[in-house]
Image 1 (cartoon, one colour):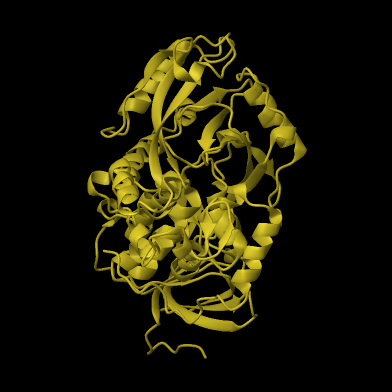
Image 2 (image 1 turned 30 degrees about the vertical axis):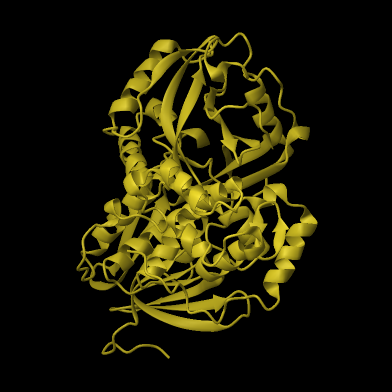
Length: 520
């Protein structure tokens, strides 16, 4: 039944899309006292937001395109996020070997000087030159690479950043619905009416909200085509980025950034203790595929590019896992995919000029590093259309599990390992690196391995799976082993199938009403 204009909508804001931008907006809005409803057609972070290079970074190469605003904002956010989520975001030092046939040393020095100073760096050390013949990172490289540079950025568990933002939004009163597709939108002068379909059982519901935020990522234009008449927007360009994972190529904590002859850069990053993450590609697509998958040509491109640097060649046969995602980049008419801006564009539509209607704000582009700032700008724009009482707050508020004293991950980990002496140190390190201070909620009543219940493989036990189902919206084995954790790296297909069967039986927490603790 539709709302007549004398009734009040049930929600202030409907957010469409459960990627990093959508959950960031939902969290910020809920924290300002708004009634928020978020729907996602699949799992949280199932697409672009879990297919990143896992970095919180300014984007060193964007300086070449004079994208100083993006780099400055990203560098500022780098330290904000490091303080608010120290359990899933960690400082990392990067080594850039100097390739004599590519960018000259003076250009790199100037770029790194700007990178050190554009964002008002406080927590992370500055850049410097290194002698690769003496530096620990030089041993894995070809002997021809004698000089290089070292600088700071941060690593992030990208899918967990999304899930924890959604969890915090829910804890602050938002309604978060996964596997719920928005199939149509109807606009009225004072509100929107959305028709939603549960993708698991086909049940259709309707939700009314004063405003809509279209954070559907690659599907942003599809949402606008679902009956929404808006003014002309520039749209998105689809750029596929793929990564491969191989057994670890080096035994130190440094990451590498490699120049390539085509002007791009590739990363080699320590990953899940025993592996190295390599990527990424930039392949422009004419249309959005049903599923993004890496191609043999992309695998070969990555292998050849990094083998230019490593003393031991990387071959396609070494690949143990790969992932691919489509980046919905704002169409700025750049000549090729690598030069398309990674900045975002926000488009607010209030209907016809002669007759204002309920607002819809669409998000084009963006990157993980700037998601929090993007959410603030969304709320600022909407404040001209809606009564929003609260002000910006997320810069000073931890994500769930991130409230460690002085944002000191190492100290908290050491204390946690002492508190649970009968559990393996490596297992506690895994828990702290995923759940932070919520470790104690996860391990409530558990002191020994036997207390953790069924062992599904690798480091995955029943206690953690139940926690993820109850508090973090997990519904399938894929949700657990490839997004909320990366336990799938050490599990067989049979173990993952057994986990999924266990989750789909009588272990679903559907009777739960959501988290029963409040995160301040």
